[in-house]
Image 1 (spheres, rainbow, N blue to C red):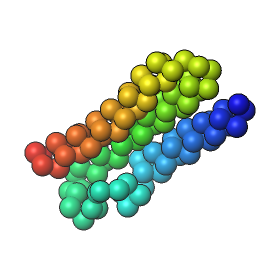
Image 2: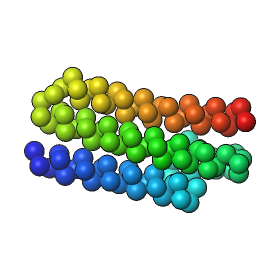
Image 3: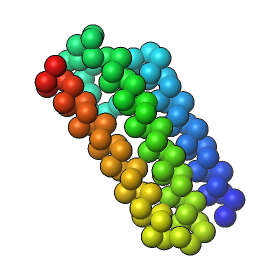
Length: 102
């Protein structure tokens, strides 16, 4: 039981640190599916901050999902999991809208 709590907190902290790293360095090599040479310089800040926001919020919702599942709130866990996956998908939608329609 405490293993899942520790794992979820460590996961959330590491995802927030990854988001902050991408926001500060604008290095998109850690994000899969993104070729850094195709992104215009004027869009890098916006994409980095949207990624940071989406990955941080999805990490919080994934942590909430794990903890809800641990305490037998199954429906709430699936709701949090769905929200987390939608946030990750939202980043890719925003990314394609920014890069395709400048």
